[in-house]
Length: 219
Image (cartoon, rainbow, N blue to C red; front, top):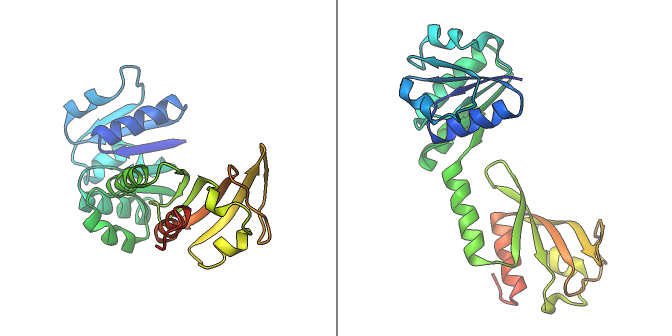
């Protein structure tokens, strides 16, 4: 895959290095040449120094032949403009945009970009780890709006039918149940046993309700 990474800060340099080590052709663009020192010593992709919004710089980076572009500078406005240029003028098929300031995320969402908001995502992960060690995130979609959690069936759920506990809200759905090392697709009349592992797809509001149920308290 031929990928262009716009911005060689901490995130951009890490992303570029990862992509290169996975065997992709990577070009990194930044307006400060010293920024490329953040790349791993064995990075053998291309680097292009210049004004990021310059047509000449983008074309020197090979944007007309790119399969993907990641705009990951610390400027949401710059990321949006570069991504929109890549999409509308150069028809780059896969574009991912970094959201630096969570307050500006709605602006990026208005463009319909695939967005990664590391600040919002990181804050949510830390909150989950602090609030409940018995619930673990195993998969996150988008920026964490919907996730799949793994939780231990607690004593106060023992013997209950799954439908009693998960049928009260559209904010969470059972995905899998593991009993004695064997996983199955749970149904409404599945009987829960303490120690079973239950995977649930949920929104942030849904998992808050489930956490309350784990402790026997109302959310």
